[in-house]
Image (cartoon, rainbow, N blue to C red; front, side, top):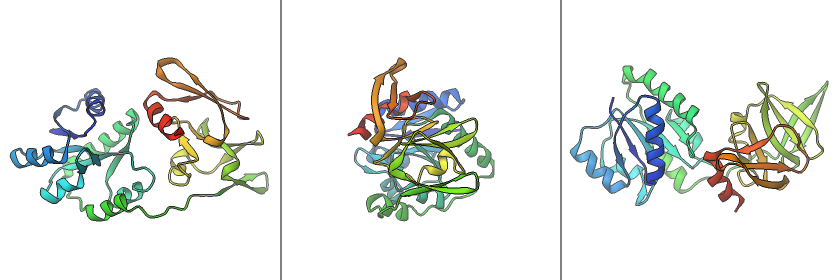
Length: 251
């Protein structure tokens, strides 16, 4: 199976290569720009699978498809989590959010390997996705959530929630009042519901609200430990892969 990576950040490309090696996939080529990719596709047989970054150093990677009729399967790697994911879902495209999580990568590869023998052609409207990337629509995020408390329903405003977390196969919200409520949603379901300027997913277990960060402490293996104003349950650790984006999010 022939696999290539198109990614302008060389450290990110090398890390993805190492992760794919663990999954017994060999990357034959790494390309780092739109121009380099177009030249390569003109001269080489198209691979079975492309890991494709959207924003390259010399433009959006969709420019490659405007110049070349790509026949390969594609797994996108993207930081456009705020507004583009719905477009990917509608077009049945596999995608991975940066920084790439090993378990999510493995799941995407397994999905590709399941579909690969069928070699079904996939119709992708790159123009529609490109429009969403370049001119994103205004998004409406949830301003309040409802939870069941016995026979009653309680309304909790988003700006009163310190964090969302998973525990014992359940998803909970922790409020500024020090209360914890079981929710019907999973953390994944919350992904497109939360205001990204307010909430950040620091790990697979936690979304935290910037408003309630009390302290940030250096932790082992280049990670960070977060203390919130009222929540005192599980330790909140920013995973090493998300530390850079977390610091950018803090502004």
